[in-house]
Amino acid sequence: MNTPNFEVLLHVTAAVAVIVVLARVCGALAEKVGQPAVVGEMVSGILLGPTLLGSLAPGFTGYLFTDRTRPVLYTVAMLGLCLYMFLVGADHEIETGRGRDRWAPVALAVTGVVGPAVLGGLGGGLLLAGERPAGVAPWVYAVFLGGALSITAFPMLARVLQERRMVHTRFGRTATTAAAVDDALAWCLLAVVTSLVTRGSALGAVTTVVLPALALAVAVLVVVPRVFRSRLEAAVHRGHLDEGLLAALLATTLVVGWAADAIGIYSVFGGFLVGVALPRVPGFAPLLHGSALGLVRTLMLPLFFAFSGLNTDLRTLASPSYLLPLVALVLVAAVTKSAAGYVVLRRWFRWSHGEAFAMGAIMNARGLMILIFINAGLDLGVLSRPAFSMLVVVAVVTTAAAVPLYRRHFSDAVEEAAREEGLRRRPRATAVGAREPEWASPG
Image (cartoon, rainbow, N blue to C red):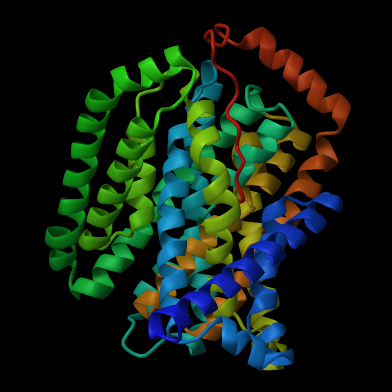
Protein backbone atom coordinates (compact mmCIF):
# COMPACT_ATOMS: atom_id res chain seq x y z
CA MET A 1 0.00 0.00 0.00
CA ASN A 2 1.64 3.20 -1.18
CA THR A 3 -1.13 5.79 -1.29
CA PRO A 4 -0.45 9.42 -0.24
CA ASN A 5 -2.70 9.05 2.83
CA PHE A 6 -0.88 5.91 3.91
CA GLU A 7 2.46 7.72 3.58
CA VAL A 8 1.19 10.51 5.82
CA LEU A 9 -0.02 7.92 8.33
CA LEU A 10 3.44 6.34 8.46
CA HIS A 11 5.13 9.68 9.11
CA VAL A 12 2.57 10.83 11.68
CA THR A 13 2.66 7.54 13.60
CA ALA A 14 6.44 7.62 13.81
CA ALA A 15 6.46 11.28 14.81
CA VAL A 16 3.88 10.80 17.58
CA ALA A 17 5.77 7.80 18.98
CA VAL A 18 9.06 9.72 19.11
CA ILE A 19 7.41 12.80 20.62
CA VAL A 20 5.58 10.90 23.36
CA VAL A 21 8.60 8.80 24.37
CA LEU A 22 11.00 11.75 24.44
CA ALA A 23 8.54 13.90 26.41
CA ARG A 24 8.08 11.13 28.96
CA VAL A 25 11.82 10.55 29.34
CA CYS A 26 12.63 14.24 29.69
CA GLY A 27 9.72 14.76 32.09
CA ALA A 28 10.92 11.90 34.30
CA LEU A 29 14.48 13.26 34.29
CA ALA A 30 13.18 16.68 35.29
CA GLU A 31 11.26 15.20 38.22
CA LYS A 32 14.37 13.34 39.39
CA VAL A 33 16.17 16.66 39.86
CA GLY A 34 13.24 18.25 41.68
CA GLN A 35 11.65 20.04 38.72
CA PRO A 36 8.05 19.81 37.47
CA ALA A 37 7.67 17.41 34.55
CA VAL A 38 6.63 20.33 32.33
CA VAL A 39 10.20 21.65 32.34
CA GLY A 40 11.48 18.41 30.84
CA GLU A 41 8.59 18.23 28.39
CA MET A 42 9.26 21.78 27.20
CA VAL A 43 12.93 20.89 26.71
CA SER A 44 11.97 17.73 24.80
CA GLY A 45 10.18 19.86 22.23
CA ILE A 46 13.24 22.08 21.83
CA LEU A 47 15.47 19.02 21.39
CA LEU A 48 13.31 17.78 18.52
CA GLY A 49 13.60 21.08 16.68
CA PRO A 50 16.42 22.71 14.73
CA THR A 51 18.30 23.47 17.97
CA LEU A 52 19.57 19.88 18.29
CA LEU A 53 18.00 16.95 16.44
CA GLY A 54 17.13 18.99 13.38
CA SER A 55 20.77 20.03 13.18
CA LEU A 56 22.39 16.67 13.99
CA ALA A 57 19.98 14.43 12.08
CA PRO A 58 18.14 16.53 9.50
CA GLY A 59 17.16 13.44 7.51
CA PHE A 60 15.46 11.88 10.53
CA THR A 61 13.52 15.00 11.48
CA GLY A 62 12.74 15.58 7.84
CA TYR A 63 11.07 12.15 7.75
CA LEU A 64 9.09 12.81 10.94
CA PHE A 65 8.01 16.38 10.27
CA THR A 66 7.17 16.76 6.59
CA ASP A 67 5.08 19.54 5.09
CA ARG A 68 2.11 17.17 5.09
CA THR A 69 2.48 15.85 8.65
CA ARG A 70 2.96 19.20 10.38
CA PRO A 71 -0.65 20.35 9.82
CA VAL A 72 -1.90 17.01 11.17
CA LEU A 73 0.26 17.27 14.30
CA TYR A 74 -0.76 20.91 14.79
CA THR A 75 -4.46 20.05 14.52
CA VAL A 76 -4.24 17.23 17.07
CA ALA A 77 -2.13 19.42 19.37
CA MET A 78 -4.69 22.24 19.31
CA LEU A 79 -7.54 19.80 19.95
CA GLY A 80 -5.54 18.50 22.90
CA LEU A 81 -5.03 22.02 24.23
CA CYS A 82 -8.74 22.76 23.97
CA LEU A 83 -9.61 19.60 25.92
CA TYR A 84 -6.84 20.18 28.43
CA MET A 85 -8.02 23.72 29.18
CA PHE A 86 -11.52 22.32 29.63
CA LEU A 87 -10.16 19.96 32.30
CA VAL A 88 -8.28 22.81 33.97
CA GLY A 89 -11.39 24.98 34.05
CA ALA A 90 -13.54 22.13 35.39
CA ASP A 91 -11.09 21.56 38.24
CA HIS A 92 -10.72 25.10 39.47
CA GLU A 93 -12.64 26.31 42.49
CA ILE A 94 -12.11 29.76 43.97
CA GLU A 95 -11.61 29.77 47.72
CA THR A 96 -11.49 33.20 49.30
CA GLY A 97 -9.72 34.06 52.50
CA ARG A 98 -11.01 35.95 55.48
CA GLY A 99 -10.89 39.61 56.36
CA ARG A 100 -8.43 41.63 54.35
CA ASP A 101 -6.89 38.46 52.89
CA ARG A 102 -9.97 37.90 50.74
CA TRP A 103 -8.78 40.76 48.52
CA ALA A 104 -5.20 39.49 48.26
CA PRO A 105 -5.77 37.27 45.16
CA VAL A 106 -7.37 40.09 43.17
CA ALA A 107 -4.69 42.59 44.17
CA LEU A 108 -1.98 40.05 43.41
CA ALA A 109 -3.45 39.19 40.01
CA VAL A 110 -4.04 42.78 38.89
CA THR A 111 -0.59 44.02 39.90
CA GLY A 112 0.93 40.79 38.60
CA VAL A 113 -0.50 41.59 35.17
CA VAL A 114 -0.34 45.38 35.06
CA GLY A 115 3.23 45.71 36.33
CA PRO A 116 4.84 43.07 34.10
CA ALA A 117 2.60 44.04 31.17
CA VAL A 118 3.64 47.69 31.31
CA LEU A 119 7.29 47.23 32.23
CA GLY A 120 7.68 44.02 30.25
CA GLY A 121 5.91 45.52 27.26
CA LEU A 122 8.08 48.64 27.29
CA GLY A 123 11.27 46.74 28.09
CA GLY A 124 10.55 43.92 25.69
CA GLY A 125 9.47 46.36 23.01
CA LEU A 126 12.79 48.18 23.31
CA LEU A 127 14.94 45.06 23.64
CA LEU A 128 13.28 43.32 20.71
CA ALA A 129 12.47 46.39 18.63
CA GLY A 130 14.61 45.06 15.79
CA GLU A 131 12.49 41.90 15.70
CA ARG A 132 9.14 43.67 15.30
CA PRO A 133 7.60 42.39 12.06
CA ALA A 134 6.79 44.94 9.39
CA GLY A 135 3.20 46.07 9.56
CA VAL A 136 2.84 45.50 13.31
CA ALA A 137 2.35 48.76 15.19
CA PRO A 138 4.88 49.35 18.00
CA TRP A 139 2.15 49.65 20.63
CA VAL A 140 0.46 46.43 19.50
CA TYR A 141 3.85 44.70 19.65
CA ALA A 142 4.45 46.06 23.16
CA VAL A 143 0.98 45.00 24.35
CA PHE A 144 1.57 41.48 23.08
CA LEU A 145 5.00 41.18 24.72
CA GLY A 146 3.59 42.61 27.96
CA GLY A 147 0.78 40.06 27.94
CA ALA A 148 3.21 37.20 27.30
CA LEU A 149 5.50 38.29 30.13
CA SER A 150 2.62 38.80 32.58
CA ILE A 151 1.15 35.30 32.30
CA THR A 152 1.40 32.65 35.04
CA ALA A 153 1.47 28.86 34.69
CA PHE A 154 -1.81 28.37 36.54
CA PRO A 155 -2.16 24.59 35.93
CA MET A 156 1.43 23.86 36.95
CA LEU A 157 1.16 26.08 40.01
CA ALA A 158 -2.00 24.31 41.14
CA ARG A 159 -0.43 20.89 40.49
CA VAL A 160 2.61 21.73 42.64
CA LEU A 161 0.44 23.00 45.49
CA GLN A 162 -1.82 19.94 45.30
CA GLU A 163 1.14 17.56 45.39
CA ARG A 164 2.48 19.36 48.44
CA ARG A 165 -1.00 19.41 50.06
CA MET A 166 -0.98 23.20 50.18
CA VAL A 167 -4.13 23.90 48.16
CA HIS A 168 -6.32 24.70 51.18
CA THR A 169 -3.79 26.84 53.03
CA ARG A 170 -3.89 30.62 52.95
CA PHE A 171 -0.93 30.53 50.58
CA GLY A 172 -2.55 27.94 48.30
CA ARG A 173 -5.94 29.67 48.15
CA THR A 174 -4.33 32.98 47.33
CA ALA A 175 -1.95 31.56 44.73
CA THR A 176 -4.47 29.46 42.77
CA THR A 177 -7.14 32.15 42.67
CA ALA A 178 -4.65 34.88 41.75
CA ALA A 179 -3.13 32.72 39.00
CA ALA A 180 -6.56 32.01 37.49
CA VAL A 181 -7.48 35.71 37.44
CA ASP A 182 -3.99 36.60 36.21
CA ASP A 183 -4.28 34.27 33.23
CA ALA A 184 -7.80 35.46 32.42
CA LEU A 185 -6.53 39.06 32.23
CA ALA A 186 -3.57 38.01 30.09
CA TRP A 187 -5.87 36.12 27.70
CA CYS A 188 -7.96 39.29 27.40
CA LEU A 189 -4.82 41.11 26.23
CA LEU A 190 -4.26 38.36 23.65
CA ALA A 191 -7.85 38.70 22.48
CA VAL A 192 -7.35 42.46 22.06
CA VAL A 193 -4.14 41.98 20.08
CA THR A 194 -5.74 39.23 17.97
CA SER A 195 -8.72 41.39 17.11
CA LEU A 196 -6.56 44.41 16.28
CA VAL A 197 -4.26 42.40 14.02
CA THR A 198 -7.04 40.50 12.25
CA ARG A 199 -9.62 43.31 12.03
CA GLY A 200 -7.33 46.29 11.62
CA SER A 201 -9.18 48.83 13.75
CA ALA A 202 -10.43 49.24 17.30
CA LEU A 203 -14.06 49.56 16.15
CA GLY A 204 -13.77 46.48 13.98
CA ALA A 205 -12.19 44.60 16.87
CA VAL A 206 -15.05 45.49 19.20
CA THR A 207 -17.86 44.66 16.79
CA THR A 208 -16.42 41.50 15.26
CA VAL A 209 -14.44 39.99 18.13
CA VAL A 210 -15.09 41.50 21.56
CA LEU A 211 -18.90 41.58 21.42
CA PRO A 212 -19.25 38.09 19.90
CA ALA A 213 -16.78 36.76 22.50
CA LEU A 214 -18.84 38.26 25.32
CA ALA A 215 -22.02 36.81 23.83
CA LEU A 216 -20.39 33.38 23.62
CA ALA A 217 -19.20 33.59 27.24
CA VAL A 218 -22.65 34.57 28.51
CA ALA A 219 -24.35 31.82 26.51
CA VAL A 220 -21.97 29.14 27.78
CA LEU A 221 -22.14 30.30 31.40
CA VAL A 222 -25.96 30.28 31.29
CA VAL A 223 -26.64 27.12 29.25
CA VAL A 224 -23.95 24.65 30.37
CA PRO A 225 -24.90 24.55 34.10
CA ARG A 226 -28.57 24.07 33.27
CA VAL A 227 -27.89 21.23 30.85
CA PHE A 228 -25.32 19.28 32.83
CA ARG A 229 -26.04 19.67 36.57
CA SER A 230 -28.43 16.73 36.96
CA ARG A 231 -26.29 14.49 34.74
CA LEU A 232 -23.15 15.29 36.72
CA GLU A 233 -24.95 14.54 40.01
CA ALA A 234 -26.17 11.23 38.60
CA ALA A 235 -22.62 10.31 37.54
CA VAL A 236 -21.31 10.97 41.04
CA HIS A 237 -24.13 8.91 42.52
CA ARG A 238 -23.26 5.99 40.21
CA GLY A 239 -19.56 6.38 40.89
CA HIS A 240 -18.51 6.42 37.23
CA LEU A 241 -18.73 8.60 34.12
CA ASP A 242 -20.67 6.89 31.34
CA GLU A 243 -19.70 7.22 27.69
CA GLY A 244 -22.79 9.22 26.79
CA LEU A 245 -22.03 11.97 29.30
CA LEU A 246 -18.34 12.00 28.38
CA ALA A 247 -19.23 12.32 24.69
CA ALA A 248 -21.63 15.19 25.46
CA LEU A 249 -18.96 17.04 27.47
CA LEU A 250 -16.29 16.56 24.81
CA ALA A 251 -18.64 17.56 21.99
CA THR A 252 -19.72 20.71 23.88
CA THR A 253 -16.09 21.62 24.49
CA LEU A 254 -15.11 21.15 20.85
CA VAL A 255 -18.14 23.07 19.54
CA VAL A 256 -17.45 26.03 21.84
CA GLY A 257 -13.75 25.78 20.92
CA TRP A 258 -14.72 25.93 17.25
CA ALA A 259 -16.89 28.98 17.93
CA ALA A 260 -14.01 30.67 19.77
CA ASP A 261 -11.69 29.97 16.84
CA ALA A 262 -14.28 31.29 14.38
CA ILE A 263 -14.62 34.49 16.40
CA GLY A 264 -10.86 34.86 16.54
CA ILE A 265 -10.07 34.26 20.21
CA TYR A 266 -8.66 30.70 19.93
CA SER A 267 -10.14 27.38 20.99
CA VAL A 268 -8.24 27.32 24.29
CA PHE A 269 -10.59 30.08 25.48
CA GLY A 270 -13.58 27.99 24.54
CA GLY A 271 -12.30 24.90 26.31
CA PHE A 272 -11.52 26.79 29.50
CA LEU A 273 -14.88 28.57 29.37
CA VAL A 274 -16.84 25.28 29.23
CA GLY A 275 -14.82 23.91 32.14
CA VAL A 276 -15.45 26.98 34.27
CA ALA A 277 -19.16 26.88 33.41
CA LEU A 278 -19.63 23.28 34.57
CA PRO A 279 -21.59 23.15 37.85
CA ARG A 280 -19.43 22.31 40.87
CA VAL A 281 -20.68 18.88 41.91
CA PRO A 282 -18.52 17.41 44.72
CA GLY A 283 -16.76 14.26 43.56
CA PHE A 284 -17.22 14.84 39.82
CA ALA A 285 -13.75 16.22 39.01
CA PRO A 286 -11.95 12.95 39.90
CA LEU A 287 -14.38 11.01 37.67
CA LEU A 288 -13.76 13.38 34.76
CA HIS A 289 -10.01 13.30 35.15
CA GLY A 290 -9.94 9.54 35.43
CA SER A 291 -11.77 9.27 32.13
CA ALA A 292 -9.98 11.86 30.01
CA LEU A 293 -6.89 13.39 31.57
CA GLY A 294 -4.40 10.58 30.99
CA LEU A 295 -4.89 10.51 27.21
CA VAL A 296 -4.78 14.29 26.86
CA ARG A 297 -1.84 14.64 29.22
CA THR A 298 0.44 11.93 27.84
CA LEU A 299 -0.48 11.88 24.13
CA MET A 300 -1.86 15.20 22.93
CA LEU A 301 -0.01 17.84 24.95
CA PRO A 302 3.49 16.58 24.03
CA LEU A 303 2.53 17.25 20.42
CA PHE A 304 2.11 20.91 21.28
CA PHE A 305 5.49 21.05 23.01
CA ALA A 306 7.03 19.44 19.93
CA PHE A 307 5.33 21.89 17.59
CA SER A 308 6.64 24.79 19.69
CA GLY A 309 10.10 23.24 19.62
CA LEU A 310 10.05 22.97 15.83
CA ASN A 311 9.65 26.76 15.71
CA THR A 312 12.47 27.33 18.21
CA ASP A 313 16.08 27.64 17.06
CA LEU A 314 18.35 28.53 19.96
CA ARG A 315 21.39 28.54 17.67
CA THR A 316 20.33 31.92 16.34
CA LEU A 317 20.49 33.37 19.86
CA ALA A 318 24.20 32.63 20.33
CA SER A 319 25.30 35.84 18.57
CA PRO A 320 25.90 38.93 20.76
CA SER A 321 23.12 40.81 18.98
CA TYR A 322 20.63 38.32 20.41
CA LEU A 323 22.36 37.08 23.56
CA LEU A 324 22.39 40.37 25.48
CA PRO A 325 18.71 41.15 24.76
CA LEU A 326 17.86 37.58 25.76
CA VAL A 327 19.58 37.89 29.16
CA ALA A 328 17.93 41.26 29.71
CA LEU A 329 14.52 39.89 28.72
CA VAL A 330 14.83 36.99 31.18
CA LEU A 331 15.74 39.46 33.94
CA VAL A 332 12.85 41.77 33.06
CA ALA A 333 10.41 38.85 33.05
CA ALA A 334 11.68 37.44 36.35
CA VAL A 335 12.08 40.67 38.30
CA THR A 336 8.84 42.41 37.35
CA LYS A 337 6.59 39.43 38.09
CA SER A 338 8.33 38.38 41.30
CA ALA A 339 8.62 41.93 42.60
CA ALA A 340 4.94 42.61 41.99
CA GLY A 341 3.88 39.58 44.04
CA TYR A 342 6.34 40.32 46.82
CA VAL A 343 5.47 44.00 47.21
CA VAL A 344 1.70 43.45 47.19
CA LEU A 345 1.70 40.78 49.89
CA ARG A 346 4.50 42.24 52.00
CA ARG A 347 3.41 45.88 52.02
CA TRP A 348 -0.35 45.76 51.56
CA PHE A 349 -1.31 42.56 53.33
CA ARG A 350 1.52 42.27 55.87
CA TRP A 351 2.61 38.78 54.89
CA SER A 352 5.98 37.58 56.13
CA HIS A 353 9.07 38.07 54.00
CA GLY A 354 9.34 34.33 53.33
CA GLU A 355 5.73 33.85 52.26
CA ALA A 356 5.76 36.93 50.02
CA PHE A 357 9.05 35.81 48.44
CA ALA A 358 7.68 32.32 47.80
CA MET A 359 4.53 33.76 46.22
CA GLY A 360 6.55 35.99 43.91
CA ALA A 361 8.66 33.01 42.90
CA ILE A 362 5.85 30.58 42.13
CA MET A 363 3.72 33.19 40.32
CA ASN A 364 6.75 33.81 38.10
CA ALA A 365 6.48 30.40 36.38
CA ARG A 366 5.14 30.65 32.82
CA GLY A 367 5.02 26.99 31.79
CA LEU A 368 2.59 25.88 29.10
CA MET A 369 0.57 29.10 29.26
CA ILE A 370 3.20 31.34 27.70
CA LEU A 371 3.82 28.75 24.98
CA ILE A 372 0.14 28.90 24.01
CA PHE A 373 0.33 32.69 24.06
CA ILE A 374 3.44 33.07 21.91
CA ASN A 375 2.40 30.37 19.43
CA ALA A 376 -0.71 32.47 18.85
CA GLY A 377 1.56 35.47 18.30
CA LEU A 378 3.66 33.54 15.80
CA ASP A 379 0.53 32.49 13.90
CA LEU A 380 -0.70 36.10 13.88
CA GLY A 381 2.62 37.37 12.55
CA VAL A 382 3.22 39.51 15.65
CA LEU A 383 6.41 37.62 16.58
CA SER A 384 9.48 36.81 14.54
CA ARG A 385 11.10 33.41 15.03
CA PRO A 386 14.11 34.79 16.97
CA ALA A 387 11.76 36.67 19.32
CA PHE A 388 9.68 33.52 19.67
CA SER A 389 12.81 31.54 20.57
CA MET A 390 13.77 34.13 23.19
CA LEU A 391 10.37 33.86 24.84
CA VAL A 392 10.65 30.07 24.85
CA VAL A 393 13.87 30.47 26.84
CA VAL A 394 12.03 32.82 29.22
CA ALA A 395 9.38 30.12 29.66
CA VAL A 396 11.91 27.40 30.50
CA VAL A 397 14.08 29.53 32.82
CA THR A 398 11.24 31.07 34.85
CA THR A 399 9.42 27.74 35.17
CA ALA A 400 12.58 25.91 36.26
CA ALA A 401 13.36 28.57 38.88
CA ALA A 402 9.90 28.66 40.46
CA VAL A 403 9.82 25.56 42.67
CA PRO A 404 13.40 25.78 44.02
CA LEU A 405 12.80 29.40 45.03
CA TYR A 406 9.44 28.50 46.59
CA ARG A 407 11.14 25.77 48.63
CA ARG A 408 13.66 28.22 50.05
CA HIS A 409 10.91 29.36 52.40
CA PHE A 410 8.48 26.44 52.45
CA SER A 411 10.50 23.63 53.96
CA ASP A 412 8.60 20.49 54.99
CA ALA A 413 8.17 21.83 58.54
CA VAL A 414 6.90 25.23 57.36
CA GLU A 415 4.46 23.56 54.96
CA GLU A 416 3.12 21.32 57.73
CA ALA A 417 2.50 24.34 59.93
CA ALA A 418 0.68 26.08 57.06
CA ARG A 419 -1.48 22.98 56.48
CA GLU A 420 -2.46 22.81 60.13
CA GLU A 421 -3.37 26.49 60.11
CA GLY A 422 -5.39 25.95 56.93
CA LEU A 423 -7.38 23.11 58.52
CA ARG A 424 -8.26 25.30 61.50
CA ARG A 425 -9.44 28.11 59.25
CA ARG A 426 -11.45 26.13 56.68
CA PRO A 427 -15.09 27.12 57.07
CA ARG A 428 -16.47 23.65 56.46
CA ALA A 429 -15.34 20.11 55.74
CA THR A 430 -15.04 18.84 52.22
CA ALA A 431 -18.32 17.43 50.96
CA VAL A 432 -18.84 13.69 51.10
CA GLY A 433 -17.41 11.99 48.05
CA ALA A 434 -15.18 14.95 47.17
CA ARG A 435 -11.46 15.21 47.40
CA GLU A 436 -8.78 17.66 46.44
CA PRO A 437 -8.43 18.20 42.69
CA GLU A 438 -5.82 16.03 40.99
CA TRP A 439 -3.86 18.56 39.01
CA ALA A 440 -2.09 16.20 36.63
CA SER A 441 -0.98 19.17 34.66
CA PRO A 442 2.11 20.27 32.82
CA GLY A 443 1.77 23.96 33.23
